[in-house]
Length: 129
Image (spheres, one colour):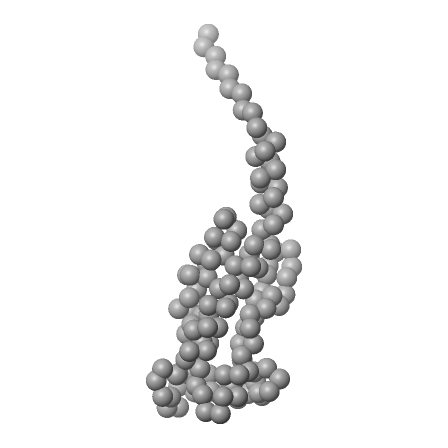
């Protein structure tokens, strides 16, 4: 009769490492989301149309907006207290309006799309180290 035996030691350390990883995962995801959001906003600030500067100056930095046990939502954008949100939408969505390069319509949507994969990598790095 053939037999095989194996002994694994050090499970306490492995369990502690996994406990630490899972316990801190939401904080790490938030940190990654905020870093990614800052990258998106920096790119957006480079292409947001500027007439009087009010819209550009109304940028809202990335914040964690809503958190549950299963999801984390980050928000960033334009239309702070100094700008009516309708103005932001008008400038952002009107594709017929002329903009001097490098400014453009879709000045928030385009950077969000452009950096989506990079934001995912940032979050992955924050979570896994």
